[in-house]
Image (cartoon, rainbow, N blue to C red):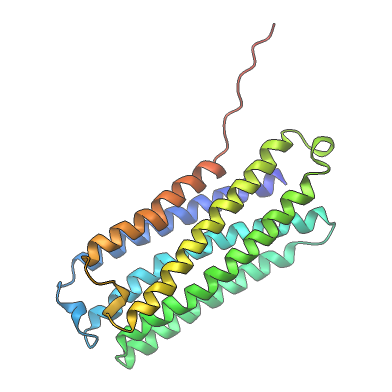
Amino acid sequence: ASGAGWEMRRWFHILIVLSTLARLIGLIVELSLPPFALESSASISCWIVGLVHGVPDFLYLTTFSLVVTFFARVYLTTLGTPSETMRTIFVTANCGMYISFIVVAVITLVTKSYVSLRVFTFAFLAAAYALAMILLMVFGLKLAARLQPRAESSFPDSDKIIKRVVAMTAISSFVLFLHFLHCIVALAVLNHRKQGYPGGINRYTFDALMYVLLDLLPTAMAMYVTTRKPEPVREEV
């Protein structure tokens, strides 16, 4: 289990870095667009913004779906059930997700339905975030409950491991809920305003606030929880 946990942490950190880099690239691209370009739904800039916002959002979803898969695999292992199927489901679901995004991006570009890419992204992610949040809470809490009765007799530092599982479940579920809420609100705003930005606030300011709230702070907390802490040195008497 420790080997699987180390592998999960390694990939979790890699995906966090990739999603952060994708977000940075997206911001650079967005800042290079003319400020007035997003005012018209007929402008290809609307499609570009949908693309550069969508890629890091999907990477972020993949990052936390990895946590769901890990918890599910460990839980099934404690039941004595083969867990390799969960890895296959994770890879298949994520490949299908990215292929769907690429197909919709191409279709909306060819048909010049530029805003539709943004609508698809918000709708798809809202459903995916909700599903991931539910599965994460189910498997995270079931895993913690499963480990609790046999913790002291089965492995050392059991309390730390269980607390880490519960903390990661709480943080990740809250993050996924915030992303789900953001997508739902953006879909509602899209009926009145282009790109899903609320009125009365500059879109760059809004994006900065959302990235800090939805990405940076939760990522910092998740990185802290998943980073292996050095063992305290015990002095010999």
